[in-house]
Length: 292
Image 1: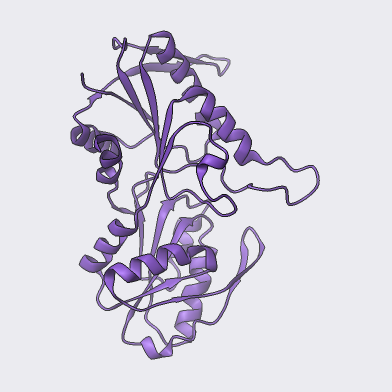
Image 2 (image 1 turned 60 degrees about the vertical axis):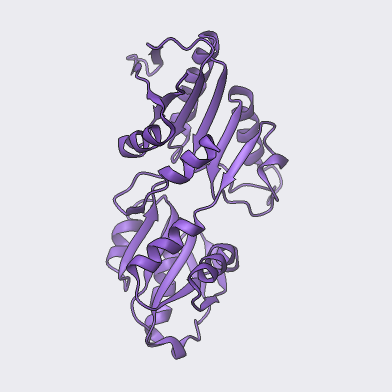
């Protein structure tokens, strides 16, 4: 029996491509908000004994999570057999420890909530900084997928003579792995953060690569300040304008416009979060996790 595919704020292109690859049945959910802001939903498909795959774009999660919970609980009442949550971008991974007395460790709380309502989680390149794996906070089976091969393929096809650059130590895992696949040089910079929008990066010391195209790789592009500062440092060192690649296109506020106006050649992201910069399709990566 075909799995039922539910789209939760995800792009229709990603959902349709994924459904085709897994031979799934896209299912309509009737929903609207009452005048007081409360949610109404109705699942029209017979769900008895079937597998539900919910593809959820959880960027800006607060307004999306409660309707997601309502959908999951409705499916359970309709006797669905299994609920698989496909969240290409997994939010609430930032606060993974108590930095100041009294702070809530929201990554743990969010994991506890999701674990109560779905049977399995599939995500892409979550921001695992102080956690070794999602198993430390999620009590359900989880699959973590990686975009490295897809990013490397795009660079091979689109960038002449790349120099891979990781703007900070956290980005090294993506930068080094991508450079290894392409067999090209890479360097890792050091970053100091003084606030959400105030960052400084170390000089690249990459003047010997002036004939290369710098390619900055990071997991998340949010304020864009790290990419912009790195691009400025590259320009001062006499290098070409870089291509900036992020796995997750969060782009808070005017970040995307600010990056477009900076010394940046191109801005590229994976289709984990719907955005005009999406040039790397990850539907096949998600489908493989379901079909293998």
